Image (cartoon, rainbow, N blue to C red; front, side, top):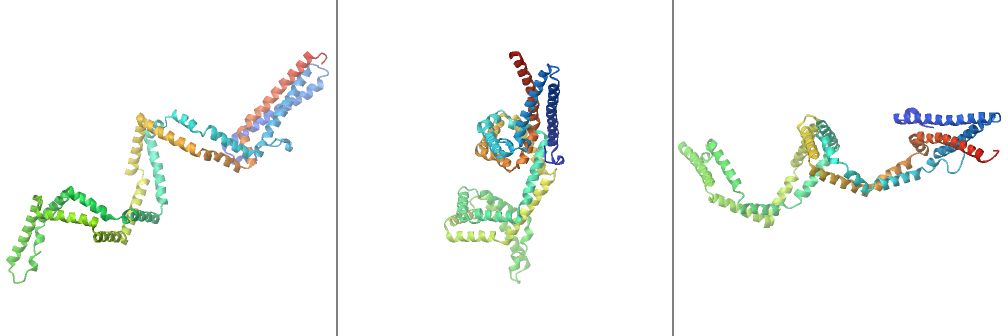
Length: 425
């Protein structure tokens, strides 16, 4: 039957082929047995009239066996190679069978109400949660996700990523005007007095530096004095400058209304207003921003950041004991625990999954079913016949065997009824 070499068939198909051959041999053996019985009974019937019943049964069995052999064979090929109409149905109507099968699946299986009814009785999220709760399963999911993420990262072109980052930066950072937004933001900060903390921090830092770096004032001013000024005066000038600087910083720190603070508030207010309304100031800011982002050094820094991040991610994804992998597995297990124990979350997830499945089925069911139609259309007729016969041929051989038995019983019954009802028959 099979034109495909046995070695090229899968183990399952090899077993099906052996079963098909066995059943063909049994069905053929039954036909041969009936033929032998018919010949013997026909030959001896004149001497033993009761053999007429045996002959009738054997004759009916042969007719039934031959009729069912013809019917089964006609499905797959032309019986005896004869061009009999309506035979070799499967190879001749392969494409139509594929279309019909696709329509059947689309109509009866890929229907929104069918999918919804099935999924509504299946605890998808609970089962998934119970499966993910197992530590080995969580680690497996994390491992597979890491492998996929690593493959995506390696497939990405560094130049393309850097170009994308540059395009996004230009679109969202460089092209928009910063000045109006920065001015509005700064104005709100000044009006809310929210900058006080930053000023206090700066003053405190400056005061701490001054207290710990008095030596930095030695010669800071005195070196600019004329050479004829006494050395004692040099020291006095430096100490005075240091003392005044320290007093100034402490005064700014303790006095919320210190002139320096007021001057700073005024400067920030003018800066906020200028950023919003002064065209020249806005142009200077935009020019400085563009110059900064167009700087080759900034581009090199962005490339270094990407390469460093990519290398770090790849190393973390490849190492089973890395912090990233461990945290991912723990997060997956925690998610599974919630899915397994939280009925409200289960209801939401099941609802999302069901709605998504129904949407996909309703939208793409014809495309999904067309896979069957397109696949069958691409099959070679002989290959299609062989595949189908391997799947159902063994069961069809039972039809031949049953036809032999039923034919024998029918022949016996007809012969017996005829002798009972027709005198002299």
